[in-house]
Structure formats: structure tokens, C-alpha cells
Amino acid sequence: MNFHIDNSDIPAGIKRPNKCTYKGNNIPSSDPLPSLQIPKFKIALCQLTVTSDKAMNLANARSMMEVAAEKGARLVVLPEMWVCPYANDYFAKCSEDLVVENSSPAFRLLSEVSSRLRITIVGGSLPEWSNGRLYNTCCVFGPDGELKAKHRKLHLFDYYAPGDVPFRESDFFSTGDKPTIVDTDVGRIGIGICHDIRFPELAMLYRARGADLIIFPGAFNMSTGELLWELEIKARAVDNQFFVAACSPSRDSTGSYTIWGHSMVVGPNGDIKTSSGHEEMIAIAEIDYSENQLQREIFPLQQLRKENIYQLLEPCAPKHFV
Ligand SMILES: NC(=O)CCC(=O)C(=O)O
Image (cartoon, rainbow, N blue to C red):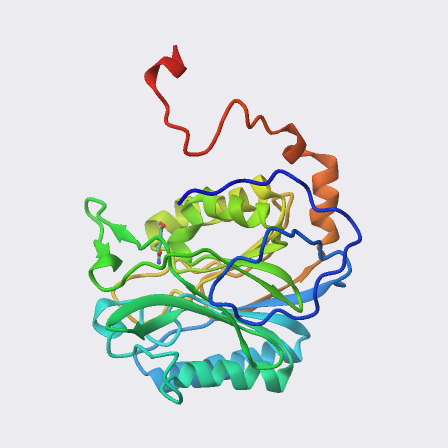
């Protein structure tokens, strides 16, 4: 992927368009607009327990989203793989075709709940079946119940640590081929799914395109979870000076892949706004995008960048290091 990083900071006081309808995963053109006129709002991360019973998972997600909205959340987030366990045996049999009408109960649920409760939903991820392929896919719905964006996981999780249970998503899933950034009623949101968080270039691209917040539905495992989950969330937030939210299933979810949990929202200066433990719960935080702006004024990192010294994707011949 080759992209140009636009260094310009977001000018103050420009109003975002009220609405952005789904344009097939396209990044909005490079017209970074601030969300300073979006008042503070509450985000809720539903760290739900995923079982092998899909109907039960759907019902549980519905009731957690309802509780989140009752508590005042305008943006509700579900975890990676919330319709079925994060396990090879379930992906194909629980997959849904998001295009064929009435063939996706999860799609219908997210659309119905978002429009009834007038909330924006970042619908975690589910196994999507499309043209003979499986994808690990996140759908974003607006308060009108319309699909605003669809992100297919770009970086599949293939993991072989000695002594640990190996996991190869690429045996089952195909990769997405586009970054996803979407204008919503609660700001401009970049989407990544779990392992996508380990690729800082994606977050940098979202920053360059004016994102206020990145959301990662995720399901880190126990070893990398303890070492890296919080670190990666904070790093993406601090490097780019925006909010980052990551939502996981709870640890007691079904399957041999044990999940770290610890859903979290981190602010642009690296402070944890809310964090769950590993059990089923809803973590709620207030988001105020003026903190992004403030942080960018305190540390004007974008202005200090030395693009002439380090350029992304520039081949590094050994002579550069002598
Ligand atoms: N579901 C995932 O992509 C897991 C990623 C993970 O655990 C990591 O360490 O990266």
C-alpha cells in the first residue's frame, strides 16, 4: 500500500457534513475536517461473552446495546467475533452474506437497534461470506439504521509462538484490501480489526485523513494481550494524538483461544478513559474531541515531522546507515 501522508493539521472551526452514506469503504477525499462542533458524547464498549449459540449471542448483544444506550451512550461498540466463538470450527458455519437480503440476522439486528435507539454502532466483527470467500468484517451503522461503512480485516492474525496454541486466520479468511474511515454523527472514525492495530501506518493514514477516533474491535490472546494490548492502544493514540477505543469479548467466551479482555478507551495524551477487567461488562467513557486539538497544540508533532529525513516506503540502502 502506498499512500501519501498529508501533514496539515486540521483547521479549526470547520463544520463536518451532517451525513455520509456508505460509499463502499472509500476513504473520504482528503478534506480533513474537525469535529470540534460535535459536543462531548459517551462511548460504550460492550465486552460481551461469546457462546457457541449464535441466537444467544445476538440476544445478548441486543440487550447490552440497549443498556449502553440507556446509560447515555451515543456510540456503541461490539467486539471482534461476537456472533460466534473465535475458533476455526465456527467461522464458516456462522458466516453471513451481508448483501443478499434477509440472509444476515446480525446485519438486521444492528440496523434495527441503531435506528430504534438512535445511536451509532460499530458492530464488532463477524465472519462475512462474499463471493465464495470469508472475511473478518466490521459493519458501522448510523442512527438512521443505514450501513455507513464496512471494514474487512486487513492484517490476518497468523501466530506460531513456541509452547502456545498456534492460530492461522489466513487458513480461513481472505484479507480486506481497503482502509476504512467514516463520517458519523459522532465524528470521523477510522476502523481496524484487532491485529490491524499492530500496523502503525494504518493509524497514521487515518490521522492524515482527519480521523478523530480509531476503533478496533479486537480479541488479543493471553500472552500478547498482557504484554501488548494496552501498549498498542496507547501507542496509536499518542503517536496520532487522537482517541483510540478497543473492544474485546470477555475472557470466559467459548473456545480454546483464551481472550485477554480489557476493553479500553485511551485519550490523545495516552490517559486511560475507561478500562474493563476480563469479565462481561460495559465500559463507558466520555469523548471530547477538543482534547485532540489541545494535545496537538501542546505537542505540535505534525509540524515537527521531518519528512525529508524519514519517508515511508523509501527503500533503505545500507549506505543510509553509515
Ligand atoms: N484476533 C487477533 O487479531 C489477535 C491479535 C493478537 O493477539 C496480537 O497479538 O496481535
